[in-house]
Image 1 (cartoon, rainbow, N blue to C red):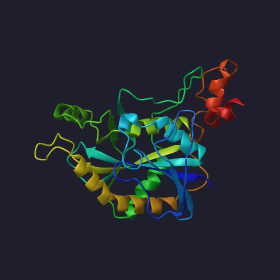
Image 2: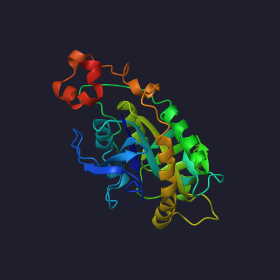
Image 3: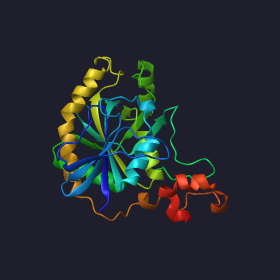
Image 4: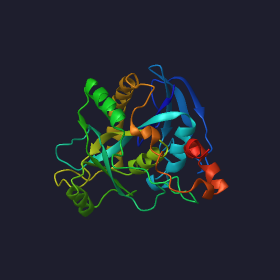
Length: 285
């Protein structure tokens, strides 16, 4: 049975309730992931958990090796990934402690590797719908059944950080009609699609960013305290969602690379072919 990958964000550095827990370090062609992966079972299904910023929160958003993280999930057999992430709200009606399941992203980052390809092999995957609709629906149903204040759909702006927004930036993001803002998810979504892994986000709202004049500007203490408040809810949602996942995937995520590779196989350098064999071998061998 394929595994469910879970990425823990700020304040969520371990996953409660795992049976048969063990750790595994993974070496990838793209360097080291954020930390060792924690493997176990939840509701009878294999789980692979990774603390995005490393245990002890050692990595800035820009310092995260997103390629290594997603490659490691693929190597460990994860066919789906759920990201549990702290976000700020860009809309009055989206309140702290709400759970938002965004289905769109705006990439406002500047200094990050966002593809596995290059070095003699070119691929262009479709990202019109960056979130797996099937996984997204299962998470929303699970969130509702847990009594969460859940919102289905919306746009996540991914900013560079590590500083929080200026007020001018916050108002700019609101002009995009975006719903929430964070610093990490867009690279994960892009790379998961290239790795043919389903991806969806549980965005845990911690604050109103800084656009709202009647609210104090966001602080780290506020973010972490509210994410901890939401950690139990996130665990409950995941436990319920796991039981609803089928082994087979009918979504387009499963073969996202089928028609995406443009390079003539005969022209692909041997080292590039080997580096990406885990991802593209079935199309090139």
